[in-house]
Image (cartoon, one colour):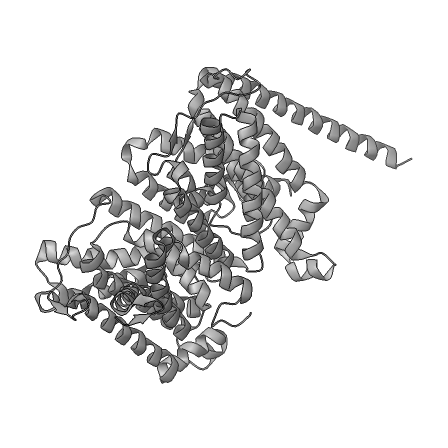
Length: 324
Length: 295
């Protein structure tokens, strides 16, 4: 029985890997629970919302190979709609988020339907141009509050018995949505559907010849990404109590590209790390005003020129080089 | 009173002219974008920033050195074009073997650096720039009063566009250019220095953007956000026209300027979105754009 020792070895390796994984998960859970007692909760809320946005964006940029330059439209419109529902209509936060997310899904379907047949750079230009329509609607519509945006959006949720939530409670509220969103993205990426997406990214003609309806699959992935970006925007409006033109303008679309690029395209944790870095930069360097954006631009250039895998991607490549 | 499309003739003509002026800028800018795309296969996201720099260089020449409009009309595109060449030599060149997406992202990063730096230095409010005295009068056409400078812009833009079109489509140099677009490797085998051609083409396209900036300076004022504001519109123009068609880019630019002007007249809130909506509609009917070929 020459095979038995080998199988035992494999089982042993898997067991230790499983234990390592469990330890990491435990550590993450503790860190997430302790975080609002150590770090300013509003900052964490911001990080979580943008991390979810970046993960959702990575679904199209990383896993489907579609560079959208219009994702601010989903994030921003969802922020406005959820803010409007919570503030003016008086819906509980959860329902406001649900309404806003459904709108993003529809919007994503429309964007995707127009743009999906175009590839590469065209796709970026078309999504950008379409997002401008949403931006101008946000500028002109009567319910968006123009330059001021929607301020003081109430944080009254069903889970809090419609009482206003504190900053820390809001953090856990936002965290719940983040974890659900992240879980969904993890499931999508690691499902057979996720593998088909990657096969289309690598070789579209081949995937089509295997019988996959490429356009429909891309449209589905784009719509899913738009929907989850909508969750991020809607939750941000509640958690941060604010929805403004910044959320829907074109810079936001560029910023989410940067977050994914810095962290690592087509990695699970890369966008989370990228979002944390970019938000932290904005937060701690805010006194430098527009120079922060110039710095973002420089990071963009460095990433594209020399660092195309991003932080998590480079670490992964380093580890697999050492192993292999 | 005579009327066209159930609006008085003077209103109609006035709007047509307004549209032609905006269209002049759309035409020059999308032309530059199309020229660059033809050879480099890169959508130059920095185009808006270079348009803004063109206007700013003209303003700086006047402000710091007392150099007026006419020299600036030559100097500014030259200077900004040279900066473009530098960019191509140092950064773009290293990305030609990669997916063109990276080139697109790189030009976006450069635009972000340039526009944010100008914004940090000069704020977002416009700096006034007066048109030269020879062009600063008005013509009274009975039905409307017309600033001479605006007529000059339309005329200059038509001349520049026509000249570029002739060079690209009708001369030997243009034939090389088109050959390099189709089969760069083959052209190199014939002894043509294709990398240098790419460099010059990029510089020329950037120069066009800067020229549009100088022309725009007296009309729209010189501000750090002028490029970022016009860029999405130019993308839409290029998508509608179909990439890679020089004539298509010019024609679409003028037409959409006019479309925008009439939209403003009929339903003012639609003015800022009508071009994007036109893009969506045209894409659903003709996925390759009006003048593009399907790849």
